[in-house]
Length: 217
Image 1: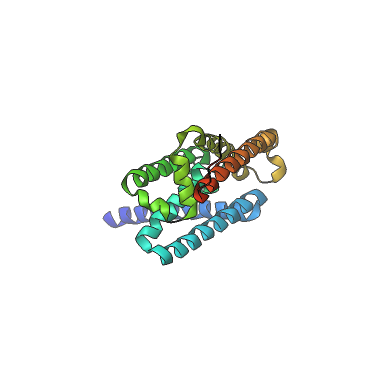
Image 2 (image 1 turned 90 degrees about the vertical axis):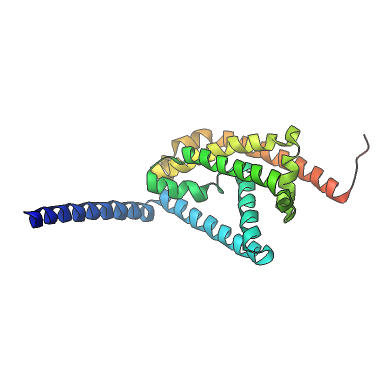
């Protein structure tokens, strides 16, 4: 009787495992077959390679410990200060594949992580911002809430618009099915132009400060 029960349990486990493998194989075929999902997957791999490559370069220069923090803060800069969700995509995409939760929700977690990293670094290890030019610029933005935090607000709007486009790419099989993108692409481009303008102002001001140039009022 016990042997029979064990066989039944084992048989059920095998069936569950087979079912799980079939689902995974089905999702893999979708990624390969569908042009939209394939482009999203390739984009994820490229961003991952850039992230790993940057970490290796920084770790060789500053050591693994400091290199890890510099890499994370650089990642958080692109999360908080660019109007596209490419940096957050490192977390959003695999999280979507594993949990089926839409990336627009996981991006909230990404922003929370990025903010926490900078609260920690800004108050506990502020010297880390001096390691690279990107982090110097980032600290310059963080130190001046008005008017430079406006770029974070614009970036947030653009990011959550673009991550919705990313969700749509995964939901659809072909580019011509992207109704949301086709409806809101001009609005997204507008925020992109505003971002470029604000970034230009910040970079100009930052460069003048680095050179020690003061404009007479």
